[in-house]
Length: 93
Image 1 (cartoon, rainbow, N blue to C red):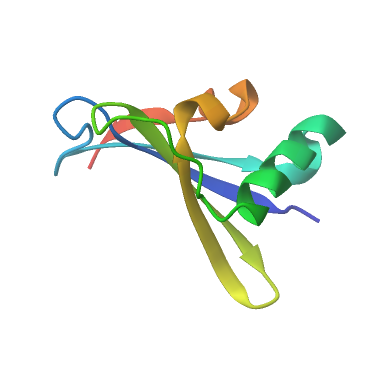
Image 2 (tube, rainbow, N blue to C red):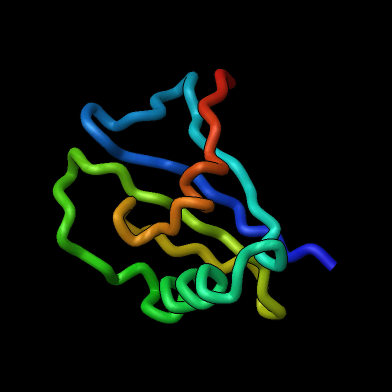
């Protein structure tokens, strides 16, 4: 059974994304290696409280479904495993 992680890259210089460009993707968490699954679990456990980035840095908004509904955290790009960030594609909306 798939457990999807929805990913959105936000921020960056000038508030990347804007009204017509979105950077997003999704990953099946069960397809990730155990150490990357653990890294994602740790990000959610910390509740997106990781700091240390400026307003011009990219951040990732991660959302997954739990028995209690959708759970979203926003974390610095440096905290996101490469397999997660590489799943993000830019698209015109």
